[in-house]
Length: 124
Image 1 (tube, rainbow, N blue to C red):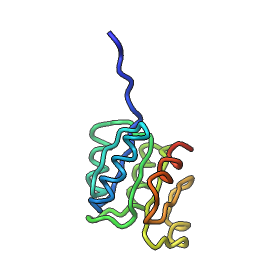
Image 2: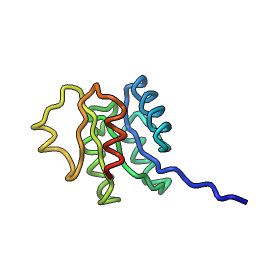
Image 3: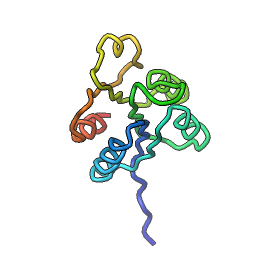
Image 4: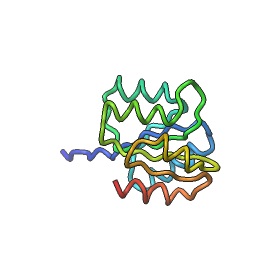
């Protein structure tokens, strides 16, 4: 009997549904599994309750719900201090990113080619 290798899983938090599908396809083609959620609250619940180890967090900054991407990343880093974080933001405000981001994170300005996300994830 052959053991199945588990694909590295990426937690994606994005409330733009068309982008969710593009990211899911690109990650699958690159050999990643993904959990795709549309709010920070859902992401915290999945991350904490399931105890699933994710290779990285990829999050939009401005999400529906009360929890934005900045706060989501901070809370997840409390539980997993080395978790790689990739922020996605339209009209990237570099000053906000510099002041709000968690250390050792990456910013991708929307729109971006999915290959840029894959390249960033492979760096971690």
